[in-house]
Image (cartoon, rainbow, N blue to C red; front, top):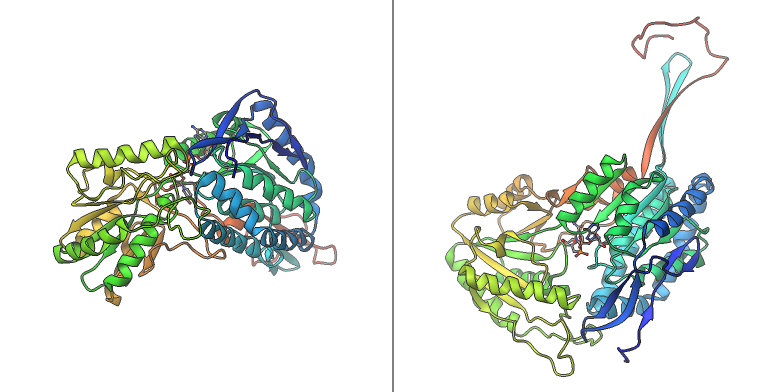
Length: 506
Ligand code: NAD
């Protein structure tokens, strides 16, 4: 593979590839080699305006297209993505670094949302009441909100955009996708596949960019709703700014997911779970397990003893090698950030049981590869416990009781997901009922809801009211209208000037 060849990407607006006009560009790395392989154009306000106007122009016709016709595009898109799965996975791995198998898995999870969105005619069925008063009927329907925008993170270049645009478009909206500037190629390819699937021009547009493009979307008068997935600091800014400009905003944000291991847990199962959920995709998942909470010193000692050799033995290499379990981090900058957290953990006094900092792979010396790291004796006051590190760094915290574990998880500023490993049904039930997170796993480390449920967190892991995809996604991308009808044949009772109970005759 020739990693030196540079390619300049483009925006995708109104069904066409459009060259960047702002004069601003950014680098896209192949993180396995640590080299710049592409240039991404960074959109300015003017390019965003062109994209939003294209989406606004396409809106009336698309909103008026029957839902049953809209979903024909999604059925076809699903088949096209399936047919091009290998190519899409390669594109993702080349820019993000994750393994091909993991990339394919994430595309499949995204396609489940497409399949959910194919059911939109059923999901948009309204409610009807006859005779709310004599001769008067009432029905409630959900209509599209208008031009929607999606701002997505680097860690799931296919899946997170697929959480958004298929549902929005199925609901009759038009869409501007602003993918992460670190790995946008997959979004461009998916937009072209949507066109090939029969989507009219302007319904789905992709602009690449950084804060300047996001700010232009946040204030644009024709943008009605914004979905954001990314870090909490940016998400809070987007939520507040978007709301201030009258937009509906959902912002799904950062995480620090805890996995509580009770003394009665099946430790083989718990160790497998912690390894997969802690180090899969190099820990760059918002549902990654980053903290193991061991209840009792005996549990903690046993867990550390079993985890350490597994972490040392992780097979690390380029995501394109099919034997590899963990690829590189996304960019050299992110590698430096994660590594500096490992340095900090040592300074803070945590016990670095496995140190992956000196990893070097022959042929990939400049690659952003960090070996798996495992800390024991992490305490809640440490920054490595409080902050989201977003890398292959697992922190083990020791607590004395279940109650202490529950308070620890619930007291963290993030509340995306949490898991408990136990054989005790009562304990599991209590945890599910009382823990302050949006998603809970019982002997399941990464409890990502199926596409027909909704995904989201609590506290600083979500700003806004709506979770994403599933029924909450449909609510977010539609607004309700309630119509009250009376037809001339109904009883005429003269003008009414006072409110009365609805059931009284009008
Ligand atoms: P990020 O916040 O840096 O970037 C996300 C998006 O926001 C990108 O499109 C980026 O271009 C844009 N952006 C970045 N800085 C901005 C700024 N100052 N102003 C406006 N826009 C800006 O996140 P990331 O590093 O790409 O992704 C990792 C983060 O995403 C982690 O915190 C992870 O937990 C989170 N994440 C959350 C979920 C979830 O569902 N809760 C899912 C995936 C990822």
